[in-house]
Amino acid sequence: MSTRFHHPENVLITGGGGFLGKAIARLLVRRGDRVNSLSRNQYPALDDLGINQIQADISDAAAVASACAGMDVVYHTAAKAGVWGDPATYHAVNVDGTRNVIAACQKHHVPRLIHTSSPSVVFTGGNMAGVNESAPYPFHFDAAYPATKAIAEQLVRQAAQDGLPAIILRPHLVWGPEDNHLVPRIIARAKSLVQIGTGDNQVDVVYIDNAAEAHVLAADCLKDNPALSGHIYFISQGEPVRLWDMVNAILQAANLPPVRRSISAATAIKIGAALEWIYSTFHLPGEPKLTRFTARELSTSHWFDIRAAITDLGYTPQISTEEGLVRLAHWLREHRSH
Image 1 (cartoon, rainbow, N blue to C red):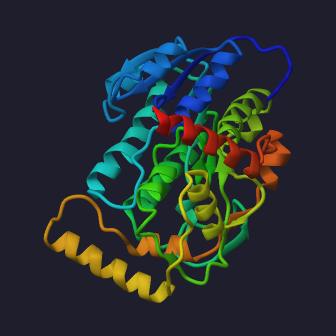
Image 2 (cartoon, rainbow, N blue to C red):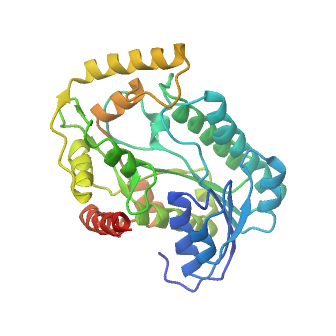
């Protein structure tokens, strides 16, 4: 984080009650910014931080426009994540919601927009090793989340070309204490988890505090260097890990045994396709235990070149993966004892 004197700013975080949004909020409060959050729910943790909470849906254009008035920076982290669900819902949140944020920033001449995207927008289903930001969008997506996040990213890029100062960040597999997505899913499925593929596939991950700091750095750097507007940056630990080693490390942090069984990637993709067909055909509630997107994601390498973020934003991961796992284990012990 920049150590120079910082003038407090008016900041809005969409999805401020989420895992990443809350981590960004903590950093901003600590340095004296006046932080506002726009989320569908109210969060006691944000009240404790003294954050002004605006309860509204990101797809409510008027509410978003009102929330963006008078802001120096908008961090757009709100999104519908996951690998299954109604494509229309993903579109309403990830595409229409982003369109609303852009329109609001343009209307109120917000000086900076930091948009949270995902590396899944360039995921082809095959191995991606050391890929940089020049990687193209694929012709086809296996899930609504990456498809809609790719459209949202392109909307922000177009807005930047039209004069809205904006940076896009692609943090990969954010994890750590208070994670409400990745870690809980691994723990909940601990007994039924099966390794997909050989287990040699490497992936990028990013510890929550590092992901949050990257966002604040992006906003600060965009203020100092408007020429960065429209740029995209991958954000990670900068050290790929074997995906299944990481899964087992998270299980170990939760005091659970490692994954012992495995199936081939080809088998997993066939099972995923069959389950998708069953769930779609019979309109089953919930989500399949496996989808084609998940099977490909869990059996391939996907790690990225973060040199652009290091060079342009001065980003370096402050918390190592090892330290992050220690913190996660401590938090899980505390959390489970209550």
